[in-house]
Length: 306
Image (cartoon, rainbow, N blue to C red; front, side, top):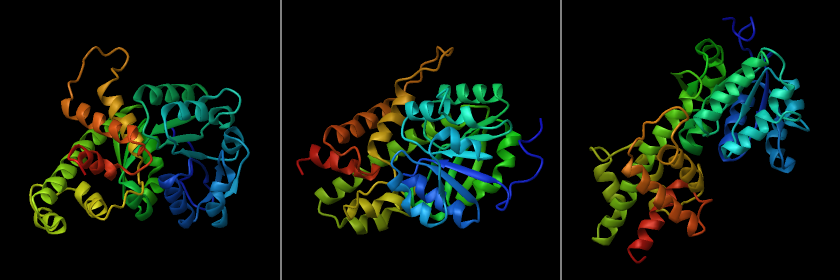
């Protein structure tokens, strides 16, 4: 298999397109601009792109027109239906405009089946697709320390490595859809950690402990985790600004708990993930779906009368 282009990726020649400029997407796109790449954006609300435009990004009128002028297009969207529309719309989607050899990299936490469909459709058009969801939150996006889980063709992922290296550390997980499967497993693990951290903090406070001393005391032991490092102080300081929205955790955990992939009759029993999904659903029901995932502590607090 030939890589999409015979020449290596290079800031002066490789044209980048970007769709999805929320908290995470904006930080990731900014890093690529800072690394010297020329970026073209598509935004349904153009005013949200003013910061990136001030850094030198150009604005395209539609996904298909953005794709026409790009070698690699990144997407960082909210939900699988958004990905389907932006990528697969037959008249205005990315694959309607992407030239043969072009690559779509989807950083959205989406469904493995959709990732496989996009890969197959891209190959029919002589293009490539990589599903590459990320973990690390807004801090990881800003600092270029995201964990990136890539599914698709291994040679294409290797060719893309200079771009991934700007944003974090990529791990090739396997064929199309494997990146998304890894992200779902990641969220199952993170969700359980957030439940435990929330309950530990509520218990510590209820029993009269200084919660900051509690964090300091346990962070170096078996209870310590990256979740604690990222979110412990934010929980204590009531900083619920989103790195990732709580409502997205409901989506991600739901893909693990509720959905069985086509052609696979195996059912995975995930009681912890099911509980975490219920608790995050409680956040959404309380009107807090747009808070960061660390806001899960508010659900445990409400259950304890606070």
